[in-house]
Length: 123
Image (cartoon, rainbow, N blue to C red; front, side, top):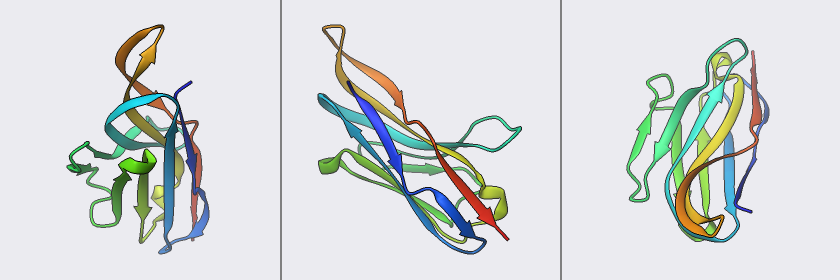
């Protein structure tokens, strides 16, 4: 019943900006760490940015200074503001969240993944 739904992907020119959103829904008792990952063609999935429940953030070196991760706990949503986009940012972007919820009658913490959204940066 808990799920993550991403939005905001698309095609943008190099130097442009996009904002990705990921909203969690369902019977949620709490959300711990949230993050964004990406996977380019022929490459492994890599961490882009994470944010804790206390708003502590981490970024991959390749996006530091250009991307900003944030969250709105009232909306159960995490965002990724992407500025100064480069062609090498082209990838499928995936949202991840550690969520406390009932699974099979037990209250547990579990990592959920979004379906992925395509970001294409053209030159």
